[in-house]
Image 1: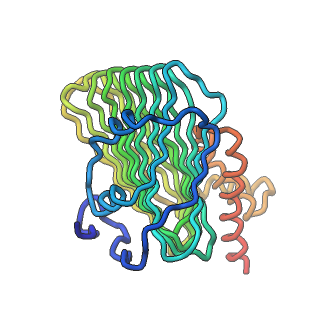
Image 2: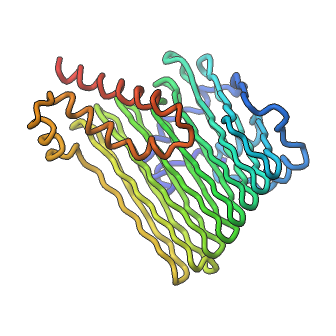
Image 3: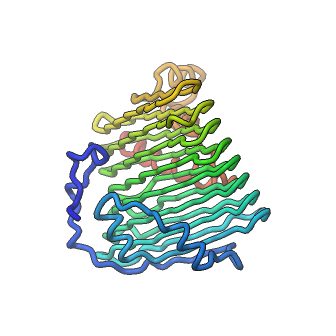
Length: 355
């Protein structure tokens, strides 16, 4: 298949034209799994979960050819109090990694999966991860993806989540690393009463670009979805958010909400936000909202008028901007570390501005 181009709507505003696939050779990443002892999915279940994976573009095709799969299945009624942690360590330059994570939650199970992507700053690599998540009837499944890659790594991710009757899925993303980092998320509610929530925090500096494409797909009646994505860009960084709420003809009684907020912290930074609705029935509740702009001058003035230095005031406003996303992430102990990483990016900008 040919490489996609920015002329395709799903790749609009992207940097895909900058990618030279011939510069990378497929190789397995170093992957570790913690907290999943005895939870391997059998070959029959794995084949069932991955039987109908779509092939949208050449990256899906390459993933199908070169993927290394981690398959986790939590049985019916099982509740895990500690998260399952999957860590992909990218090492070396000129390599392309194609990790695939398959997660199945049995009926009335409850658990959290954290997937981390890490690399050194000097490595030039391509990471093409795929997530397949299935939540059975009344299952409660939370997922958090952490992009902590170096600034010379490209990431082209695709997440597919399916929620059955009365299930609850939470898809969280924190994107701080990478050169160009893209995540496409398709969240489908196929069973009556299913609920899905998507939350994301992204912060780009230097020449970074974060790119998000989301789908909230309601197939069954009386389903619910809620999306909250918040990002900040500084220096010459860019971000793109394109989201679609799609409500099918049989999805009466559905409620779906989509919110994207962006802070532009430098003159050269740029953010694009494109929310969309596709509603094919009545008796539904839907809304979408997006904003792109600098820090609220009134908030900064309020803090400065009470004796807080300008740089501290800006830090407080930005960290406060992300608080509701951090609070929604499924793993509480990670919030302090992620907050510190955001503060470090902001401090770097404030130091450069001062000099």
